[in-house]
Length: 236
Image 1 (cartoon, rainbow, N blue to C red):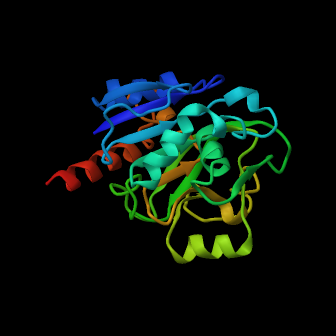
Image 2: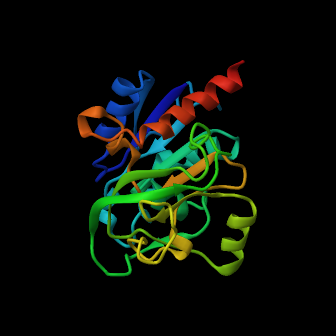
């Protein structure tokens, strides 16, 4: 399975992602500059990753300018054909702005930048991101964002629930989904979702920052293990 990490002006988690995918997971990784217009030699079983950061300085609205970067036309086409696309933090914002995921990420309810470890309850194993994680598993993953409050209209939220598209919800260390465990005011404590075709994924927490023993946290590595498990199952 090949991974492509898109680099926008202002991306600052691209090196982290390349390191984890390449060095930790041992996969082929290529950097994709935002001005490129194609995804060279990518198969639908490969994955494009939109990393965290502050693309274009988060001017106008987080992800709103990056959505119009030249490479996004190829990313949207790749996703529409069934290719895997994974957006983390700013990447999640870009995917929502591009219409590849429903909803929007708004300013945190406390109007402040938040950087800390949070707990996530795994809501489903029916995705390439969570296939190796049992539903109900609690993960400790760091967040670092000012615009992470997930919002969508009532109909969209109902569809996400009915279609089992909510990947992760903010929770207590014991797995209880409570208002106190919600760091940014996201509706229904939503921390990550997928599209209805289950090939596009977005989440605000940073699994790439929790994937090595060196960091004393391997909880995020399960998401990348899940991708490789999915790729293997499709190849046999």
